[in-house]
Amino acid sequence: MKRYARGAKWEYANDENTNLATLSKIVKTIKNKVFPVIEMFKSSPNILDQFEVNEMNKFHANWTKRTGVAIATTDIRFAWALTVIFENKNIEKAKQFANWALAQSYDGDDEWFGNKDFHRILKKNNAA
Image 1: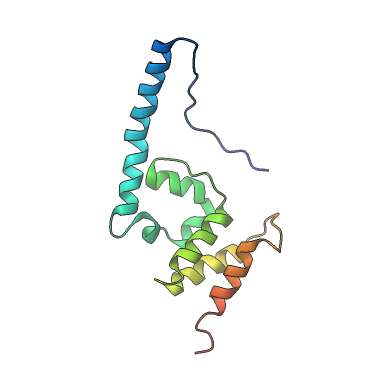
Image 2 (image 1 turned 45 degrees about the vertical axis):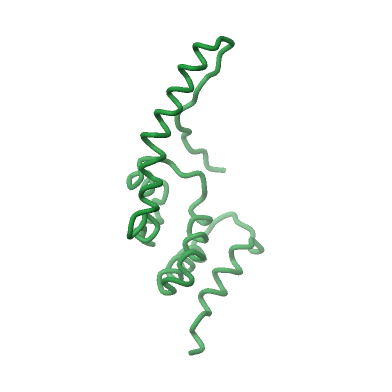
């Protein structure tokens, strides 16, 4: 199992003033780190539209470089999410992410639910 560095950690105390100071730090972090990422999702093109399959080999580093925050998922699960997201709006991009995911050697289960989506999407429009 891979270990990933965790972000900021806040300790709570038994006194109200210390906890209010900690809460203030949490709110500041949300304003500085979370809100800008939300804006990246709302912009056009959004952050997912801009993410390319060639960035998947260093997925966590590339995501963090683009957004300034770490993401709590694996590269395979992120590729699966993008495959499904792009299925109806950019089938070729969806297929790129599906192919990338299936080409990875990982300790995943061949029965993992996402594999069905990868194969289904790769077959889409091939009969046409």
